[in-house]
Image (cartoon, helix red, strand yellow):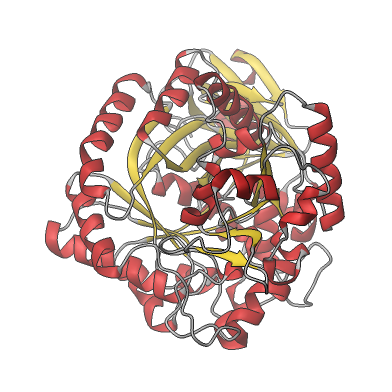
Amino acid sequence: MTAEPIDIVDLVFRGGVVLTGVPSAPRARAAAVSGGQVVAVDDVALDLAGAAREVVDLEGGALLPGFGDGHAHPLWGGLELEGPQVRDCTTVDEVVAAVRAFAADHPELEWIVGGPYDPAISRGGLFDASWLDQAVTDRPVALQSADHHCAWVNTEALRRAGIGPTTADPPSATIAHRPDGSPLGTLVEWNAMDLVLRHAPTPTDSDKRRAVRRSTALLAEAGITWVQEAALHPHDVGSYLDCADAGDLAVRVNIALRAEPGQWPGQRGAFATARAVAASRGAGMVSARTVKFFADGVVEAGTAAMLSPYDDAPASCGLPVWSPAELAEAVAAFDADGFQVHIHAIGDAGVRAALDAVEHAAGRNGPRDRRAVIAHTQVVHPDDLPRFAELAVVANFEPLWAQLDPLQTELSLPRIGATRGGWQYPMGTLLASGAVVSMGSDWPVSSHRPLEGLAVAVTRQTRQGSPPGGWVPEQRLPVAAALSAYTLGSAYQAFEDHLWGTVVPGKRADLVWLDADPYDLDPAAWPDARVQGTWLAGTRTAG
């Protein structure tokens, strides 16, 4: 079909399958693009091939709507690419060796800052400063964990920060100690991490622009066309806008500005100004219309807010970042200012506090299309599952996490036990309830490649196929639902489902070409599929 007669078009994709994302007509043989939009699909698009400026042969592969990453940290990720690369290290010794080599190659650096390291490679997620001292003793070293809720630092970093045996834990954070009372070298949660990181050199504007260019190009190579930048300060918005002005932004970006407990009333004006500047300069590439809240920490560090105590720490229910009352007041205030709210919530108490806050905002401010987002949605008490649809809350998942990897088996499950362990990542239940589900990566916390997360969403298995039948198998998603969540679901989260997320005439030509039809592959093999090309409004950005 086509909207109107067409004489010439910019692009025609043919020679494979077009997965439109439309249930009534899910597959087509071709798609035509002109003026940045899809103008025809199937037979009409095929007929336009002779009038196309360019024809792309899909070579038996598949054309899909571009993926939308509903929660990631491209600026952080880009900056981390400048430091020691320890993501794939599987032992403490490998991390130490990588840091040693990086430090030797960069004698000019005053600090060695990087990450992310895997917290499961040391018992209990605890790491000793003396281990990093084997790599560097004369300069501070600070590595962030894969979940970005812990830092592992060396002795010199502790010394520079003035952290000793009598240093008190900051609010909602912990300084780990050895049996003799000396600081271990592991800092748990942001307020503890900041005791060290605030002394590290601040990235320059040039550093940030380089990080944005590099990270958004990486996202485009993975087939991503839109990303939710999940936690920045207003002064960081300019890095994205400068890249957009220079034509160096490979994906569209919506920025979430991070609200802080106790400080949020004074942040409202700066947030509104940043939103207005992005609206005036962003040119459809950059917006800043979302406010980010951290309701709690993470299960593996024992800081996610739980309704009942941790199995391995009977005196602790975690470390909520906000009190439920203050979170509700802040969410209502920014909602009244017209912002979308985006709440990190991991534990069942954190999720409940987030839902309560959205309910409070709706009651105070009245009905509107607010599309509040709860990000991660890890442990959800069964009583709270229906509330997502009732409150029209978008459930954002990072599907790669929904597998029995060492993070689960060594850290999370021992802390919360089998019953609550089975409540994790309830994608299937929430989708069946009528809630909108979107997906993301939380990169650089985990892989930015959508195909890796999608494989887990469908199988609930590791790459090795464990466990047979999948972990919490009732939460597996059908292929079509999983693909839709990473495309149309994210477009809905972005308030842009009328613009992208399906391949139909009138939608923006934000597209990705895979070398194979996902429906022809075992989902476990999806991570091996290749992205052959990515287009943003009909302009190729990767491949």
